[in-house]
Length: 274
Image (cartoon, rainbow, N blue to C red; front, side):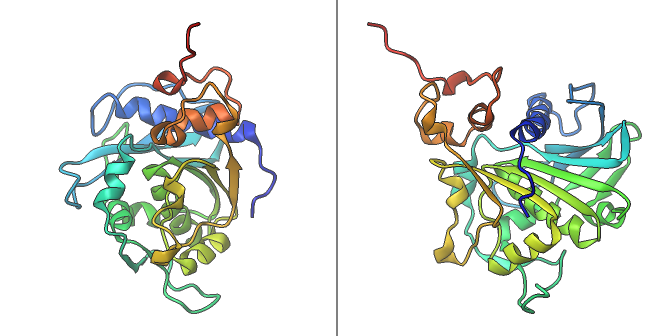
C-alpha cells in the first residue's frame, strides 16, 4: 500500500542514503568513525557486498544498519547507489531465477523469480558490527529478524534493488517493513511484485519520469514494476541538467522532492551568459 506519502519523510530517508554515500567515499570496506544521521539514530552495522559476480572484483561497502535511539524497536537498513549503474546494467544478462528467501507466491502458487545478478549480490551481503567487528552472513541476519521490531529499508539505484529484495525477505519473516526506494531498476517478475506488495506493508517506489533505469529490464523480459509508484518529474526544474546521468542522480531526486539545500553539483544546469 502507498499509505500517506510524505515528501518530508522521503527526504528524511534520502539523507540516510546520502550518509551511506559519504561512508562509501572513504574507500573502506568497513568504514569507521562517525557519520551524521538525521534524528537520534546510531549506525550499528556496516554492510558489504562480496566479489561473487564477474564485474565486482573485491568486497565493497554498500550500506549500513542503524537503530533509532528514541525508539529502539525501529531499525533501518540503508543501501547507497552506484554512480556507474549504466555499466552495471550493461553487465547483467537479466536472466530470472528463483528467489529462495520468500518461497512461492502464495496468491497464485507461482514461483517467485528475481534478476540473477541482483540476487547474487544480495546473497553475498555481510553485516559487520561497528563496535565488536562481529560478522553476520545474510542468513544469520535474517534469522535475527523480529516481529516486535519495525524495519525501514531505503536505497537508491542498485541500492534500491537490494532494498527491494531485502524488504521482501524481512517482511516474509513477519516483521513490519516500510520501504523507500529511489531510481531502482525492476528486480523481479510479476509473482515477485505481487509477493512484495503483500509482504512490505508500506512502500514508496520513487521514480523520476525521465529516468530510464526504473524502466529496465522491462516487461518484454517478463519483469514487473513494484506497484506502489510515486512519480516525480525533474524536467519541471530548469536548474537540473538534462542528461541520463542527472535524471538518475540521487540529488536530482531529492531536489525534485523539495530539498532546498541539496547540492546538485555537476547536475546543476549552467545558465548562459548574455
